[in-house]
Length: 95
Image 1 (cartoon, rainbow, N blue to C red):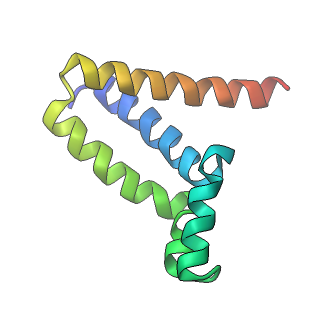
Image 2: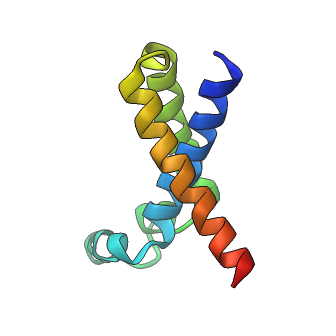
Image 3: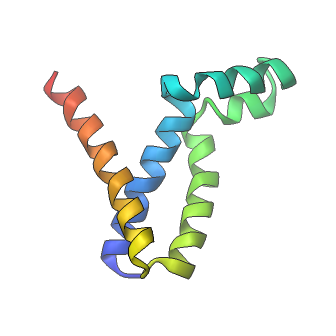
């Protein structure tokens, strides 16, 4: 795996994990999981814990990067997510 694909994959994992665990757009998903399994359940904890969710997101992204990392569509999607994450970090830091 090239350094470019690794860095794009890293940014993708960061952004997708942040979306699942913190983003307001995924709040309904987190609420449904908590309602179905209970607030103190393992599934509810999994989708609110960045450390917990990131290992599963990383497993999926790493597998995808291994098989199709050289494809333009993967690189463009990963770059979009990476830039989104870095922009969010910069906005929080600058505000």
